[in-house]
Image 1 (cartoon, rainbow, N blue to C red):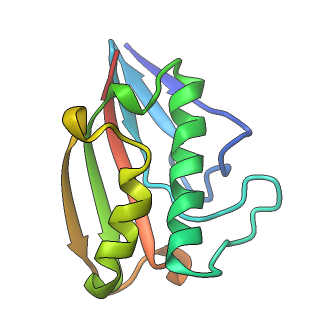
Image 2: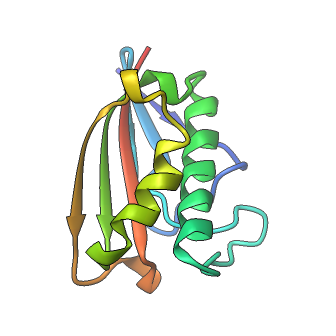
Image 3: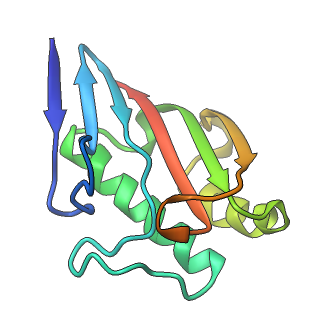
Length: 126
């Protein structure tokens, strides 16, 4: 049975999807972009700030399911410019213990929603 996860501490969905779905002990998150949940405005100052907002949004979604980044087993990162990879990786890496970091793939894409530079989704297990 699936349980819909929602928090007002992360951006509200802007389409026919939910922030996350919990099935048993496994959480599947939708991709998060750098929307400020309080204003629903994009935070695009620079790639580090944008990545931090994405990770803070994801942190809020995980918390709504009583999880943390320690529960994350898999992430997918979509980026517009592979040249930003090192800067994104520094911010992303600050949220994980490298010894227990999740599996991950990072893909450069042609376009992302609202023309952002990064989108991240995760799978987590209790």
